[in-house]
Picture 1 (tube, helix red, strand yellow):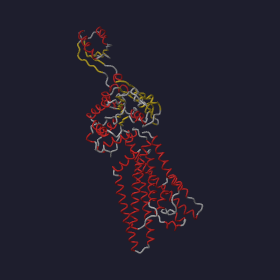
Picture 2: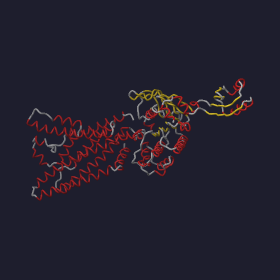
Picture 3: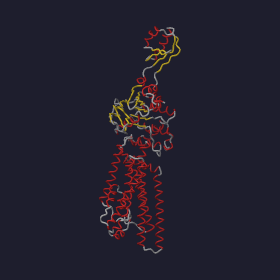
Picture 4: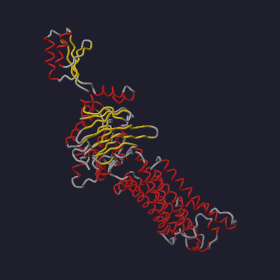
Amino acid sequence: MITIARLTIGEAARRRVLWILVILALIAVGITGWGVDRLVTLARANGTPEIQIQLGVSQILIFIAFQFSFVLAMTAAFLGAPAIAGDLESGIALALLARPLRRTSYLLGRWLGLALVLVAYGAGEALLAIFVVSRVSGYTPPAVLLPIVYLAAEGLVVLTLSLLLSTRLPPIGAGAIAVVAFGLAWMAGAIERVGIAIAAHNPGVNLEIVGQVGRTVLPPDGLWRGVIYGLEPGIVIAASNGNPLAEANPFFAASPPTLGFLAWAVAWVILVTLVAAFSLRRREL
Amino acid sequence: MSDASTPVIDVVDLRKRYGRVEALAGLTMTVQPGEVFGFLGPNGAGKTTTVKLLLGLARPTGGRGTLLGAPLGDREARRRVGYLPELFRFQPWLRAREVLVLHADLIGLPSSGRARMFADTLELVGLADRAATAIGGFSKGMQQRLGLGVALLGDPALVILDEPTSALDPIGRMDVRGILRTARDRGAAIFLNSHLLSEVEQVCDRVAIVDRGRVVAEGTLAEVLGEQETRIRCEGLAPAGLAALEVFGSPRVEGQDLVFIGLVPDRIPDLVAALVGMGVRVHAVSSGRESLEQRFLELVGHRPEASEAAA
């Protein structure tokens, strides 16, 4: 497993994937820092109260995190999708799996190597973005590490799904399905939040089930709520005061993910990895 | 798991079905330690399927078998098997030496002596000056040479080669024959799946011809090709003289030719002397056995794919 993980990381470095990700991250953080700096400078010049500026920056940071979570999900999907399927299609897997290498070890090695690359990229860029925004605006989220952990976990969920798909589908198909599934899961969460707002005035309407099913089938939306919760200032949560209309905002979370959900997210990754291992073991080469 | 007398490959009634297609229909064969075994057959005969079943890359739907004395696909047995797949590619971003390192890690070879082993292996397959070259820049022939080196890494007890010379030029093929003989001299059994009948004829101790998922002939080349045929073009042989020649075997007359089957080459001068002594005029003498290509075509028929395989 370690040999394959090392091979996977080496592949990402040698094929310039890692370096392209680093360059993209630096560009993204640079643009973010420049943009926030400009906005904050203008706002201060216009005499906007500091509390309002801080709230605005927190919302901008959440919006940037939202976009980055999509980028990270797509990165996870397109790193994971060819990892197994590409080796199977090219015949690389024949030479590897004829060795005394368990297919499960091969799969776990692929997962571990890609997970390390993905987490290094996701956490690195997120940490850098928070640091730069904090330097130029003075706003530091109440929790720095927690939203980064949730963001990385989102990426790991998509990576795990794409690896499962990669054991049976061609690379493009596996990647596309993983991205679409991620988008659908996020939409299910958005529908749930709109449903909560509607249900406040129309008790008969129950759209929460959509989000609950979505989170159970694919956990990224629930983890995304954890990212928001960590990035938003406590004053926003206090101001919403359980207002269902605030819940309808896809960039607001009144509470962090429950322990039960987090346990399920971990179990989901383990279960899907086991299914992927089973799928690969049963695959005829 | 296995000793010197245990067959390296022993399969009985091996079957494999892909949906409605029967790729193997009861394949039975045995490969002994230290022998070079040629596995021949037309396209679609089940050769690559057999290799995949031996290595556990696919599962049989029937029959049984062992590889180095262990059940097919056994992980520990695979540690002592080198394999060169027919359609394969190494990671194009790796350098030649790094491929050897990767496979040495996967086999679990000790780290001591590796540098020497890698240098020797690259030297053996003619890639000593390409150790630091990325495989992405290799020709197909160079990849095949490297694949052969990878298959021979760690002195395996069994080397399975699926069309090892398909991308090589005649010099490369000659090199490979030398490499296979070296590996055999080190004690490895070699399972050679090849379309190139002349190649098989030159290096194999025994062969099996497979057609439609079954072995239709198996044995030493002499057993598969039949006995020596001696053909004498002559004139003036009387019927009484023909009877007198039966001390050399059972002669058969084919036009102007007198044909003896199974005559040992040492007795040919005596036969010619006897004919001349009878006043027969001898024009030409030829001796040989049926070529593997002729035998192959006889056994698998003249289907287009069989002819292609024999080409």
